[in-house]
Image (cartoon, rainbow, N blue to C red; front, side, top):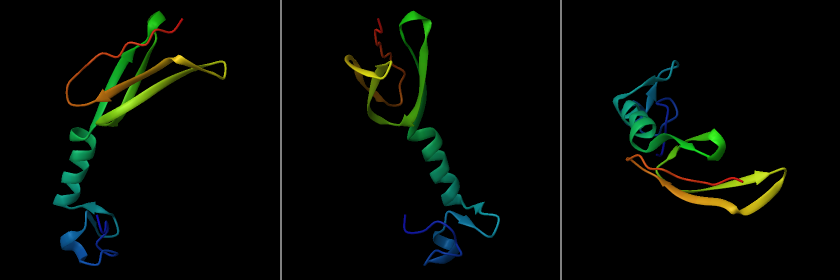
Length: 95
């Protein structure tokens, strides 16, 4: 994106995502927001051992979760996973 606000965009309102002093979304702005919030991101909850869980909200792609216990990194408590459109399960055993 080369610009965001019509008052600071070199091509003005026709290319901006928001217009005016109240930052009203344009059609393009609504589309970008929809992509960010619903198509390119996910909101997933994953279960951990002992009845605990963590929730991940992030862009689709590859991630690595690392568990640190009392300030110590445990290399055996590191797990990679991918976020995408479909649901999936990530298991991390914490002992």
